Image (tube, rainbow, N blue to C red; front, side):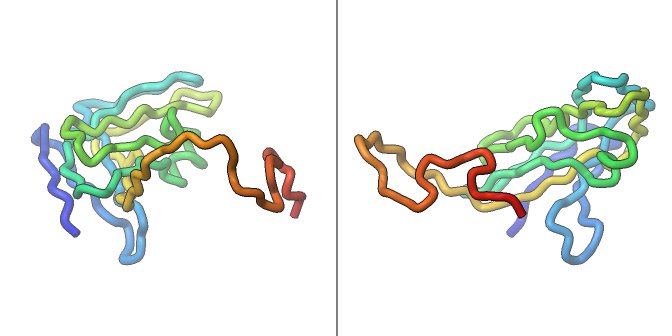
Length: 145
Protein backbone atom coordinates (compact mmCIF):
# COMPACT_ATOMS: atom_id res chain seq x y z
CA UNK A 1 0.00 0.00 0.00
CA UNK A 2 1.20 3.49 -0.85
CA UNK A 3 0.11 6.71 0.88
CA UNK A 4 0.90 9.80 -1.15
CA UNK A 5 2.22 12.68 0.97
CA UNK A 6 2.28 16.29 -0.23
CA UNK A 7 4.69 18.65 1.50
CA UNK A 8 2.97 21.97 2.13
CA UNK A 9 6.10 23.61 3.54
CA UNK A 10 9.76 23.30 2.62
CA UNK A 11 10.76 22.21 6.14
CA UNK A 12 8.00 19.58 6.42
CA UNK A 13 9.06 15.99 7.05
CA UNK A 14 7.50 12.89 5.52
CA UNK A 15 6.25 10.46 8.22
CA UNK A 16 8.78 7.76 9.14
CA UNK A 17 8.65 4.46 11.02
CA UNK A 18 10.96 4.12 14.02
CA UNK A 19 11.51 0.41 13.52
CA UNK A 20 10.76 -2.39 11.06
CA UNK A 21 7.62 -3.48 12.94
CA UNK A 22 6.34 -0.12 14.17
CA UNK A 23 2.58 0.22 13.73
CA UNK A 24 2.64 4.01 13.69
CA UNK A 25 4.66 6.40 11.55
CA UNK A 26 6.02 9.46 13.35
CA UNK A 27 4.54 12.86 12.52
CA UNK A 28 6.84 15.86 12.87
CA UNK A 29 6.27 19.44 13.99
CA UNK A 30 6.56 21.84 11.07
CA UNK A 31 7.21 25.05 12.97
CA UNK A 32 9.73 27.83 12.35
CA UNK A 33 10.69 28.24 16.01
CA UNK A 34 10.16 26.54 19.36
CA UNK A 35 6.52 26.35 20.39
CA UNK A 36 5.57 26.71 24.07
CA UNK A 37 2.50 24.89 25.41
CA UNK A 38 1.33 26.07 28.83
CA UNK A 39 -0.12 23.66 31.41
CA UNK A 40 -3.73 22.85 30.53
CA UNK A 41 -3.37 24.43 27.08
CA UNK A 42 -4.10 22.88 23.68
CA UNK A 43 -2.10 24.08 20.67
CA UNK A 44 -2.64 23.06 17.05
CA UNK A 45 0.76 21.97 15.76
CA UNK A 46 1.33 22.03 12.02
CA UNK A 47 2.90 19.03 10.31
CA UNK A 48 3.24 20.76 6.93
CA UNK A 49 1.91 17.69 5.11
CA UNK A 50 -1.30 16.49 3.50
CA UNK A 51 -2.02 12.85 2.68
CA UNK A 52 -3.98 10.83 0.14
CA UNK A 53 -5.12 7.82 2.12
CA UNK A 54 -6.39 4.85 0.10
CA UNK A 55 -10.15 4.36 -0.11
CA UNK A 56 -11.36 2.05 2.66
CA UNK A 57 -8.74 3.30 5.15
CA UNK A 58 -8.43 6.02 7.77
CA UNK A 59 -5.45 7.62 9.42
CA UNK A 60 -5.54 7.48 13.21
CA UNK A 61 -3.36 10.00 15.03
CA UNK A 62 -2.17 8.68 18.39
CA UNK A 63 0.11 9.99 21.13
CA UNK A 64 3.79 9.13 21.07
CA UNK A 65 4.46 7.28 24.30
CA UNK A 66 7.72 9.12 25.02
CA UNK A 67 6.19 12.57 24.53
CA UNK A 68 3.19 11.65 26.67
CA UNK A 69 5.16 10.14 29.55
CA UNK A 70 8.15 12.50 29.58
CA UNK A 71 6.45 15.82 28.73
CA UNK A 72 2.77 15.13 29.41
CA UNK A 73 1.84 16.04 25.82
CA UNK A 74 -0.80 14.06 23.94
CA UNK A 75 -3.45 14.70 21.30
CA UNK A 76 -6.30 16.72 22.85
CA UNK A 77 -8.95 14.53 21.21
CA UNK A 78 -7.12 11.35 22.33
CA UNK A 79 -7.25 9.85 18.82
CA UNK A 80 -7.48 12.00 15.74
CA UNK A 81 -9.29 10.57 12.72
CA UNK A 82 -8.22 11.45 9.17
CA UNK A 83 -10.79 10.39 6.60
CA UNK A 84 -9.62 8.98 3.27
CA UNK A 85 -11.20 11.89 1.37
CA UNK A 86 -9.51 14.64 3.47
CA UNK A 87 -6.77 16.49 1.60
CA UNK A 88 -5.95 19.34 3.98
CA UNK A 89 -2.96 19.73 6.23
CA UNK A 90 -2.63 17.21 9.04
CA UNK A 91 -2.71 19.20 12.28
CA UNK A 92 -2.16 17.75 15.75
CA UNK A 93 -3.90 19.40 18.69
CA UNK A 94 -1.43 18.76 21.52
CA UNK A 95 -2.70 19.14 25.08
CA UNK A 96 -0.31 19.73 27.97
CA UNK A 97 -1.34 17.45 30.86
CA UNK A 98 1.71 18.42 32.91
CA UNK A 99 2.03 21.21 35.46
CA UNK A 100 4.86 22.90 33.56
CA UNK A 101 5.32 24.69 30.24
CA UNK A 102 6.47 22.28 27.54
CA UNK A 103 8.45 23.11 24.42
CA UNK A 104 8.01 21.61 20.95
CA UNK A 105 11.05 22.11 18.74
CA UNK A 106 11.05 22.40 14.95
CA UNK A 107 11.18 18.90 13.46
CA UNK A 108 10.29 17.18 16.76
CA UNK A 109 8.20 14.01 16.60
CA UNK A 110 4.76 14.98 17.97
CA UNK A 111 2.39 12.07 17.28
CA UNK A 112 2.12 8.85 15.34
CA UNK A 113 -0.07 8.00 12.36
CA UNK A 114 -1.60 4.53 12.02
CA UNK A 115 -3.29 3.78 8.68
CA UNK A 116 -5.97 1.18 9.18
CA UNK A 117 -8.83 -0.44 7.23
CA UNK A 118 -12.28 0.96 7.96
CA UNK A 119 -15.67 -0.72 7.77
CA UNK A 120 -18.61 1.51 6.88
CA UNK A 121 -21.72 -0.55 7.61
CA UNK A 122 -25.23 0.67 6.97
CA UNK A 123 -27.29 1.39 10.09
CA UNK A 124 -30.78 0.03 10.44
CA UNK A 125 -33.26 0.84 13.19
CA UNK A 126 -34.53 -2.25 15.03
CA UNK A 127 -37.15 -2.85 17.71
CA UNK A 128 -35.07 -5.57 19.40
CA UNK A 129 -31.46 -6.73 19.52
CA UNK A 130 -30.15 -10.27 20.01
CA UNK A 131 -29.63 -11.51 23.58
CA UNK A 132 -26.15 -12.02 25.03
CA UNK A 133 -24.80 -13.12 28.40
CA UNK A 134 -23.50 -9.60 29.02
CA UNK A 135 -26.75 -7.91 27.97
CA UNK A 136 -26.75 -4.26 29.11
CA UNK A 137 -23.83 -4.55 31.53
CA UNK A 138 -21.20 -1.86 31.02
CA UNK A 139 -18.61 0.25 32.81
CA UNK A 140 -16.87 -2.50 34.77
CA UNK A 141 -19.73 -5.00 34.73
CA UNK A 142 -17.55 -7.85 33.46
CA UNK A 143 -15.60 -8.06 36.70
CA UNK A 144 -12.11 -7.17 37.80
CA UNK A 145 -8.79 -8.78 36.96
